[in-house]
Image 1: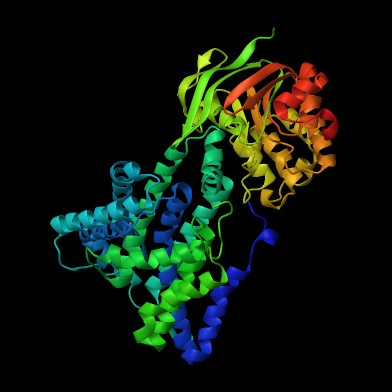
Image 2: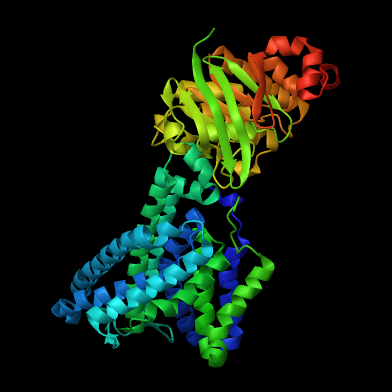
Amino acid sequence: MTSLKDLDWKPMALVPLLALAALPAVGSPSTWLTLTVAGLAMGMIVFIIASGLTLVFGLMDVLNFGHGVFIALGAFVATTVLASMGSYTAADSLWLNLLALLPAMLVAMAVAGALGLVFERFIIRPVYGMHLKQILITMGGMIIGEEMIKVIWGPEQIPLPLPEAMRGAVLLGDAAVEKYRLVAVLVGTAVFAAMVWTLNRTKVGLLIRAGVQDREMVESLGYRIKRLFVGVFVAGSALAGLGGVMWGLYQQSVIPQMGAQVNVLIFIVIIIGGLGSTLGALIGALLVGLMANYTGFLVPKVALFSNIALMVAILLWRPQGVYPVTSR
Amino acid sequence: MSEVLLKLEGVHTHIGAYHILHGVDLVVPKGQLTMLLGRNGAGKTTTLRTIMGLWHASQGRITLAGQDITARQTPDIATSGVAYVPESMGIFSDLSVRENLLLAARSARTLDDIDTDRLEWIFGLFPAMKKFWNHPAGKLSGGQKQMLAVSRAIVEPRQLLLIDEPSKGLAPAIIQNMIAAFRELKAAQTTILLVEQNFNFARQLGDSVAVMDDGRVVHSGSMAELAADESLQSKLLGLSLGAHQ
């Protein structure tokens, strides 16, 4: 594990710098705090979704433009699970709400992970090493996935209301911070901590980090990188499913195209972060989340453009992303 | 004649449209250090990569301890007991020295599972490994990276080490250090197939030698014989030993 003194702190400093730079532009500290927490929450959800995708690219050079289907599937599965546990979500008790939310998340992850296994076997595996075909076939896979969602759940928007105890806001001074956004920050932090622990403290994690740098050498040491890749792909799909649940609750509704909409954001995030870098994906996601919220408040017309501008600015500074993976 | 550990018979390798190896015949005796020499582009690295399964032989047969490994995948060949040190060294730069060695020790889940005596033996061969134990491997010098690459290959006992140009780009003092380490490995009866361009390095270590040219082995025999015969060196390698001392 890279020790703290060897860690490159500059990219990490971008997150507080962006937040501080926005303070005078926003003006009101309470509004700024609300926007900042919203941005961090959005960033954490995007990180959950993007973390698997960046490792998938890092390990096998696979450009999976179909990642969005796992997001949408996770969110739709959650609507079904939560609808069947209406008495738990309607109760004004955090514990009862969690008793509904946790199974919804676990089932969404399991279903998205299972689809990931099928997706890797039949869509990704035939096109290893062929980037153009990967882009076309994975986008095709996502379209088919969206259509399947429409067949099962219908083409209309489905509401995904927050559980009762997670609605509303808490007051921090004059700032109203939505409770669910705090939950999203907590869940995102827990996922990041689990990933850091796995990648740095387990042998499988070491293999993933080594494989991102030099997969041929990992094979020469006697490990089957393709088996490792399937595991990472399934885990990444499950995380996208979890992110889909979080995103659906954030938006309080789901549509079959939601995966395609988020896809653009997550590709911006993994490019900013450096393809294959988990820490880079976190920094990229937080920057994207904050930028979207600040510009959405200050200059709504440029909100869509702002994240692309952010990516361009970062790539001008570090052409391979904030944490480029060595040997790539 | 020593027992043969590795044998290549009529091995051909194609890389894309290019025909690189044109029927390589090579034997590596058990417990010896065999040098594979030849000019740039002669096919030495391709031979090692073909043995390792990183490129597959299009024709011919490769046997390891009597087992046919020609069509095996790289991880299977590695688990059969072959360790490979590529010319690029293949160091995982973002991982520490400790993590690099832990990965190479396949049977170990944690550092505690690695044989302590063996680790101490490696520290004896390459003290820099102990000194920079928790440092990122990417921050080591070129010589230290080469030491790490070799340490990784020997962190657990292996039947055969394939090592590609370990002296390349190293300072003379570091080369002497590597020679001393390889002498210790030889003393421990390790079987090594070592690709080298530095004849002075090769001459000091090799038991047997094979010289390649144009994708074929054009000479094989004892290293002592080649080292003593300047006209043969000149014919096979286009050099005189005197010029390389």
